[in-house]
Length: 246
Picture 1 (cartoon, rainbow, N blue to C red):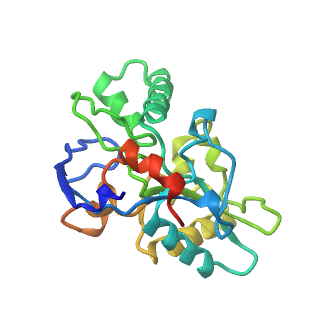
Picture 2 (picture 1 turned 30 degrees about the horizontal axis):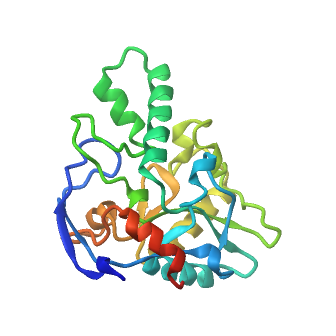
């Protein structure tokens, strides 16, 4: 039963100065179901990222997002393959990743006020709650945000100057899509990925070359839409993905 087919509206808190700040406060959930891409072979995916707790969810995507990724795959040069690093992420894992990043930021900025370190951490990991205590809708909780990379025929990630899994161990500037301190080949590969994704309607993110959104609040703000079409995925939608055809 797809009760999520009903269009539901709720207000999203302003994101403030942190990750994916949104001026559009409205989310109209469209009911696009989650699908598990592990049921098919059309799109590649890597191992569970970040921590073992991501395993149940990381290959879940909204169905329209999955279809768009298939078209991105078709647009890539021969011998190149799009690979999903992470899709849906639980709020529990999201909160853990934010706290870990916040701790790293505090170690780099020991004398900065808490509001400043919170905002700095939010550049790379969306908080579950804003600094003022209001609830956030992290992009990965919607099933519309994806972290993706391109691999060659052997499964090796092409040169992006870093791999996604190294994000916590490198200078945050290296994560920026337009980082000037990378080789021409890496810059070209980042542009290839960005162009392929944005041509299929995804919104890029200015602090992570691998992160793209469709349907969430960041996408709505980036594209000028009046509302997002994806809110946080309820547990019933996540459970239903096991029985939903891709």
